[in-house]
Length: 156
Image (cartoon, rainbow, N blue to C red; front, side):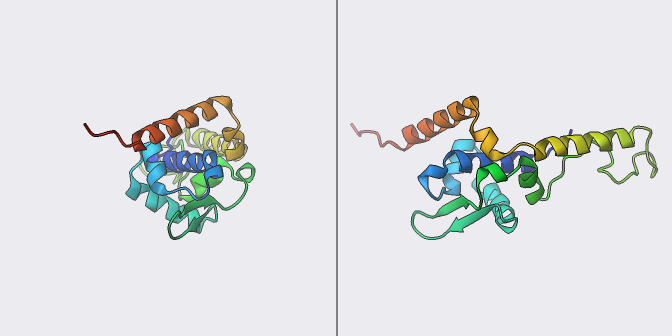
């Protein structure tokens, strides 16, 4: 399966937004620190997510991003689609030119697998992921780490 960094990071950032939604608008800088994703990369992703109607931006002090709809209605596939990614298991990128310009023997098998993966991701929402105990535990650890990093140390 070929799911690029763009798709994985978009899902990770949207799940971070979901897990921290009770704090109000979430800054990309906070997502960047918690998820170790470059701020400039997040800016590019969130521009696409905003155009895709998945997030709303809040300007000014205390600004950031909010989910544009309930996490139970946002599927992982929709996030991946919003950043113009596809889940593709073919060698040719779905173009049917796998073997010297022609379709290879297994092209249709890999296309069907891609469809199955996309269908699976259509059935998984951010809300479902956020309710998982292991994800809640990881998010808690990330928040504590971020909070610990922001505590000023006493100077000698």
